[in-house]
View 1 (cartoon, rainbow, N blue to C red):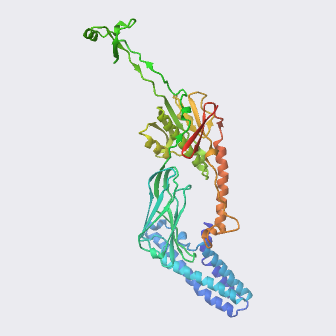
View 2 (view 1 turned 90 degrees about the vertical axis):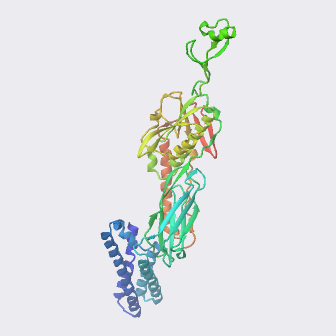
View 3 (view 1 turned 180 degrees about the vertical axis):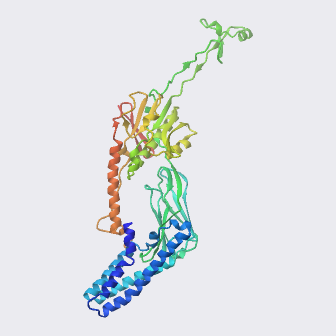
Length: 512
């Protein structure tokens, strides 16, 4: 808000000060008279146009209920940072020329002020109410709409009947989310009121269900002095399924007391059950003699009791998503840690299913604004459902991990062994160490030289200072995240596993 107020004030305050200095000069020579005659009419014309535009926007708000959402200050704020800088430097040049009598400096100041005022007058005339789209249509599509983690995503932005005034360009920028690449596009005035489709790669895809941030669209003149209000258009949605990785040493996950592996005799009466037949042997229970078959074959035949086949082991695979501090952190560490947990969760589930284990996936996830337990029987046919559940889960602060435990044998996939679960051998921990899966990668703007081509607005000192400030905050949040993830945790007990996702594989190391 302070920056906007400064830019609006820069439209008339610097020139007014220069005009006052020229009018009140102690020695009114030809230079001061020329400056007064040049600045006065231009300043009054520009100030009058700005006043008329403000009145028109206020009247539109009162007449049209749909226009009540218009921010008058935003639509009047037509100067860029470069335009504001030109306004002040030109006025200082005029005041300096009047004070010391340097005519050449006065020419430069009046020229800069005159160019700025003409550009502002033209902007107020052609930008209308400041809406950069003004009846045009902008649509956006992310393809494919459902993609696997790490794959490329193509962003298609279609423009139809978007009017771009002569001397202006349409700038478009946006991203899917904080961990995605930012796309930037420019349309020239030659593309005005035509159908244009722009494509760009915004991958690799990051796991999750993403409601893409709306695109920022604005018009800016070729001098970079004036611009329209920033419009937000064309949101989109994409679902990124987690990549299911293979697990090495999967045999180590078996034999952990997850279920019986030998045949168990059924408890039935001698005359019950569907059984095979064989000849009578000494010691057989006479109640098992099949008299009808014995008479037909001419020998004593007995029923053979059947058995239950070897039982399939059964295990619950719990994903720990309890981390309420994640929402207060601006770094990527919590999200990257959860991505690794989901990868291990699904990878271990698939490895156990391939070994014949019955797996039940359990976690806590958001649904209709609430956090509820989610449960899914993992089979080969339900792999797609498991991936969809893995894409849906996020950190939550409502259901703690131990609330998902039962008396069944359980593997817990977590970023640490929490202190509250009971010391029970049926609980096995698969720990993903956050420091192994999240590596901070910050790039400071290079010192002493511009990171972008000369004249690029992101070369500004204020922008680079803001980037350095964001990096400093991200570093502090990363340290906070590491401390929070290691709070109230204990060393993995013997029998647990340390999991490290590496490429297309998950490495498991047993804790002895």
